[in-house]
Image (cartoon, rainbow, N blue to C red; front, side, top):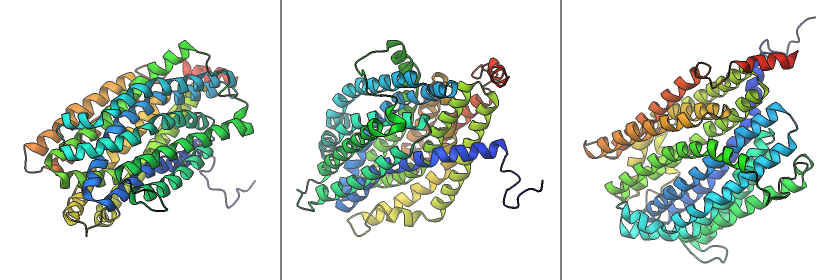
Length: 475
């Protein structure tokens, strides 16, 4: 039979089919991540219009908050590979999925309480780290309004991982987009006193995001209890019933993930504090460049989340070839995307920075010039940043988290922070040297994780019996 003219020769190739499946899962996760960080980006843009000092204080508070948030997110991320394995082994694993989600929600409540206590003392922590008292006081006030977002965000992430494991992430995307809109309107009103609201400045941004994330969680609960695809799992039924073995497994897998993410975010936070020691101009410029880089990072982050699900499903199904195919497909796409973003950052740094700072404000021209310089360095590590994100997600699909945690600590803190501190304060590079150190740390982590993925079978991460299980299932 003659091949149809509109059917490409590669359309039935396993890697092409895997790419389609990965992208179908990735794009809602990417957009949801962009919407999530869009709330912070909106606050940064609005605070940049308020004053450079407000932007600097918001950066200090935001970095301290995200250090705690990212740890919590990493911890509950263990739900994703566990659910993927369960659905890969048995398509309709209702009881097992419900128990895993329930213990994931428990984990969110457990970890939030001590993190709230930490954030409540944000001002003295920032003073201890050597920040300016005026900026520390403003940042502390912002945190006391902003910290309450932690619980609804972590609960939302557990529910989002459940939807992603079912390869139905669209509702989480809808919730995130709705939240982005609500947060933008509320932040604008409460920061500047619009629509009859009081002008609360920094505190207004925190109140707005707290309200928006609470509504986001409510939307997800409504969908999961009403939609026929999800309600059959009865996720919130018998919520009080413990499953201690499953809870321990979530912590055993999730704790190293949380530490890995905390290593990454805290090295960037430490770099922010180092920039603060160099002055408010350097700190504000750093906040802008970091926000742009973090926004670009949402795409590889979403693809890495999809890779965890795709690799985890193949792992649960006993498909060793599928594990390899799912991992390399995600990795290749991430590399192509981050190469593109690096080109854009190199070609248009001034235009990108102009979105975040009004040059007519006092000190605005100097902040914009320095931020554009930092952005050129950020462009250099886009590939390394994307590579480590993709590889982390691929290894999480194999539930391999402990050794990657050790490798991340070595790369981010020994290589990255060590070079950042040395180049920033022992050479004339100053703030630029801090960014170069960060780039080196990312490259070191990417190289280590890449070696581990390549050696996955030799290291026993993919058991030799995996391929035999798939062959037996086919027979």
